[in-house]
Length: 142
Image (cartoon, rainbow, N blue to C red; front, side, top):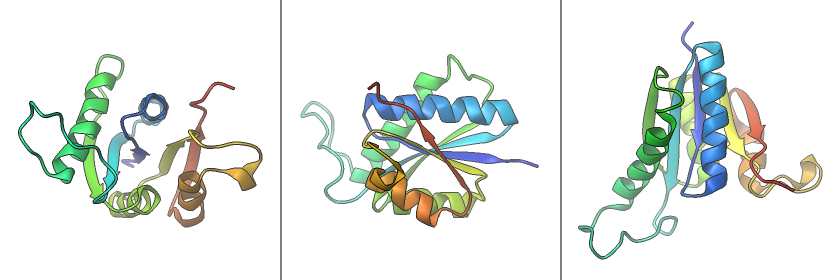
């Protein structure tokens, strides 16, 4: 059975840590990895002035591809796909997980504080709506 692990990323160091954990999980169970960057009209920064204007979709896709490039050295054999998805992060992750029939969604604990009731909105919303298991990767040192 071909499994897929889905992980959401942005440009943060915590997102890279979550992606590394997702890659490790995928490699451990023989699954593929889908790296998703969600975007909307306000979610991503403008590209630097020395780069030709790009759409927000293109910027999001480059972020996901950059994360995959960083994982290649450690997880070179792992099948990885970059996705840019329009919408809020939690909704985009759930939609992609449904589309690819994911076995697990990995999110970071960037904003997780306190007990489960205090989960960041992305982790909480993914957990409430996911069609599969959700893994919250420890990405922030306390």
